[in-house]
Length: 192
Image (cartoon, rainbow, N blue to C red; front, side, top):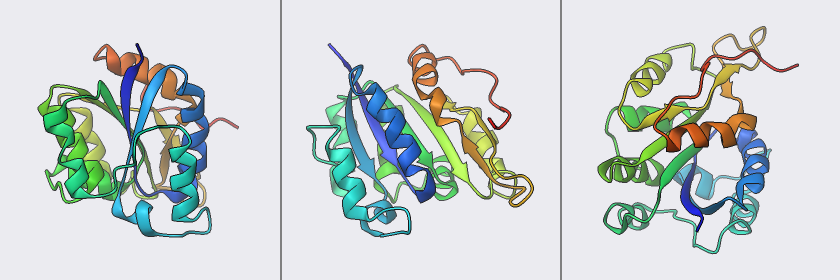
């Protein structure tokens, strides 16, 4: 029987395709379900339309995609997921989780997972991780049930505060998170 993985998708729209490529590789190992933030559900960007992204994710699951607080609220009582991964996790979504602001579906699902003593793997991606948002990464790393996908500066010359997770490590990081271990090292060099 496959482990049930809840996948939260937030902003950092430029990383959606990279995350989906890695999730496709995991589809044989895990039973995937998805939850979107409001922005992912509604915004069309230069990278994709909201409809196209939803269709791409829907092809990887038989479950309806969670897009509202009402749907997300059911995750806690149902207790059906083994682990949650949030990738990409924007600075806004990370801030909500770290500060207990559960006003979006992805943050509320993360809260539900922790309520059920389940782990959450965070794949950060933001232009501000080495700026004011960095404090939230450090807080999250020290929170029980939270693990981080290793990350690196993606464009240090142009955007010195910007970091993104190495989404190619998703499979290994999930394996560690299932064992309640943090994959190391957390800080990586950019692959050229």
